[in-house]
Length: 89
Image 1 (tube, rainbow, N blue to C red):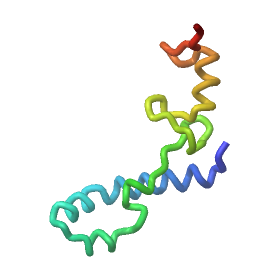
Image 2: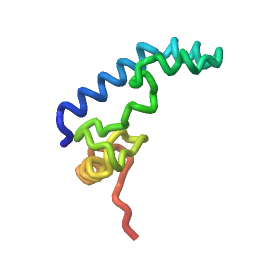
Image 3: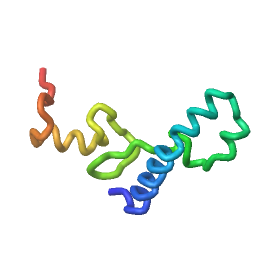
């Protein structure tokens, strides 16, 4: 489990991205890169990290399911994810 501070920091970054989204789009359309550089660093969407919804893990994140591979495997084996079965051949 990730520390709570990391999760809260990521939420704060996401809020900043939403706040400055319109301003960023306008500045990018104009080509005003000096204006873009004056915005806060966390206003850039690339600074937001994809994190597992259950454990907060950032590595091995599966976008389709919104969780890490470890959490996905546990949930799939317990039958919590519809349509996912263990492969056997």
